[in-house]
Length: 172
Image (cartoon, rainbow, N blue to C red; front, side, top):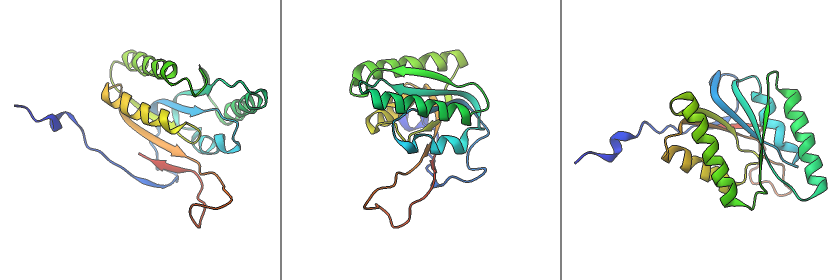
């Protein structure tokens, strides 16, 4: 009987404030998410010079004001990026099954095009948690992804969760 653990590589988890040199120089795929929230572009602006294929996921919105804010977010992301920036249109965020299928196809096609698992940088600042967990589980289970580094920009809330609000953070 073979040991199932033999198929897994090392799991490394780091957390801390985003600092110079804390990320790789190049990724196969870098993903940001458009949002109506002002903080949506904060972490991205800190890592926009990382090399790789950059794409922005945008969930459809039925609300005209939020759609306009998302368009402004995409413009901020585009101006922060010195290279190309593609936009991936997704269904409304509550249409999980449809979006899950789009995301799985998305990772499969990019992994097949590379000929192996991807190294990904994902700005999870405005990615709904259900999608972040889906991406993590689906991408690793199907071996579409070799490594994922996450960046995140905390929001500012009335009753702070911590005493000190940090800037953009990294998990990998």
